[in-house]
Amino acid sequence: MSKEIKNTNTDVSNTMEKNVSSYINLTEQSVEKTLDTIKENMIKSIDEYVKIQPRFLQSVSDFQLEVIQSSKDVINKTIAHQKGLIKEFVNVSQAQPNETYQQLFNKTNENVDNFVKAFTAGNQFNFDAIDTTRENVKLYNKALDAFTDYSTNTFNAWTAFARSFYRNK
Image (cartoon, rainbow, N blue to C red; front, side):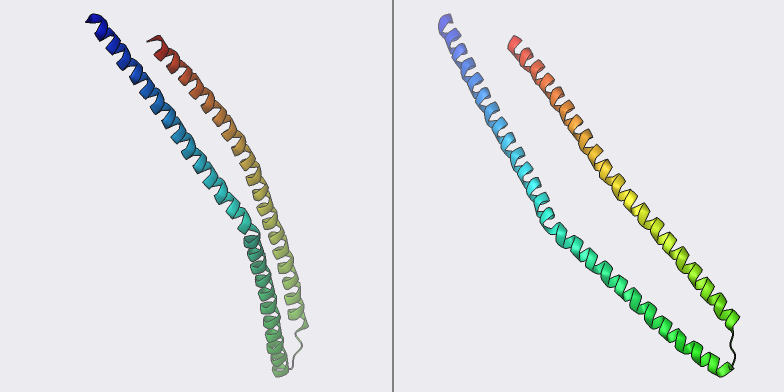
């Protein structure tokens, strides 16, 4: 009877090991399939973004050109209106305030020069920020690769330890 119990225990133990092994294989396959699906969906999302990015950039560029043209139109209309007002003022006052106009002309030129300098500096700042961001993305990718290697090595070490621990039991 003792031999029968021992055989039964061995059979039950073998069956449990097969079931556990089968479950682990099934779980590994499910996890792997799930992760592959996640990866494919993420890459698909990025690919879709890449498809619309040129249109997005074109829309931004078109908007910028429209704003530039609108700004030019506002400037032209405003100056034309002011010219009309000044002509009327001069006709009414019958005076030629050349010194005032010369000062206005000089200040206008100075303001335009300052605006161009500020605009150029602002653009340079934006270009530098974009370049820095691009470099940061490269560094982020390198850090992510290092983290992935570290995580993989840590997990491999842990699984090796766990396997040796369970084999010794």
